[in-house]
Length: 379
Image 1: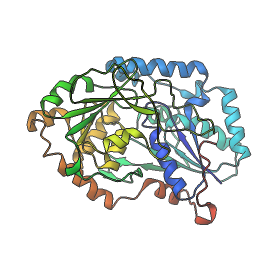
Image 2: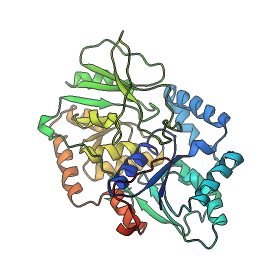
Image 3: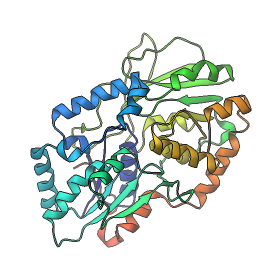
Image 4: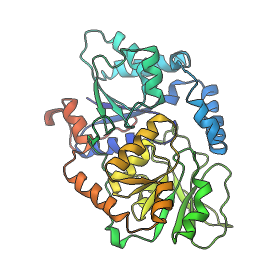
């Protein structure tokens, strides 16, 4: 028996959390397999994903407009790739699924029709506080898509609460020990208005850790550190053993060779964020996941669509973050108002279940069904 985790390569907010959940299930002794949606698309569609990533990074308005274009992803799926995947699932008698992206519902619909009479356990995991575009699109074309599935929202705008959190196996850094620095980024695709805020953030007295995207070049300015994900790496690629890995990541020094690496249990971006006073970013679901796991306050920039606006509203309501303009205009970018946000997350975390353990319970996985220490990630 193996739990199948269904991720997407759009940004990293539907990919990295899936690998973190995989790690949590592995630590519980549960066998897993990870699949990325782009692998059931034709090569031409993956090329289009790359083109969109560059366009959205260069022009945030284009990214925002793209959300308004209706998409029926069932028409984009490669029939041969789909048949190969479903044959594998049937052969291995896959029955337990965790789905992070609405695009996968077309695939699960076909699989359920082939396994008629076989009990399947499917948990839909929503990474944003209200439905993101992939879930809105599938609801438009398949209004009953969630029938027979469990549904779990990590950060729930409707109830104003945290249902569960995705653990990252790295110790927390006490707030007084953190550097007087901010981590500034635009999510997995480098979207948003973060580049417009750099001078103002430095004027407020912070050093900056920043992510470079595409052809961005580091500027030799004191107080800034630069990082980059390997520009040749894609979420739909697998390692030699067949599994998916966290993004290869490195600090960038002008004039020096950049050597990319990663960890098996967590993403190296998180390793830096946990040492910061705050994260400055648009409020995507993956960023909320990192913010809460590391108890790092989130200074929220312009959201990518209605679902990220709801994320920002929730984070502000819970006292975990603050909108950038309010932080600057009302508080002058002061650090002293951030520590209570850190404390609020720590207190909430104490009474919040861990996501992998909760999903194992909801999928009705019992100790007799698991094998301690066994993992088949992505295979």
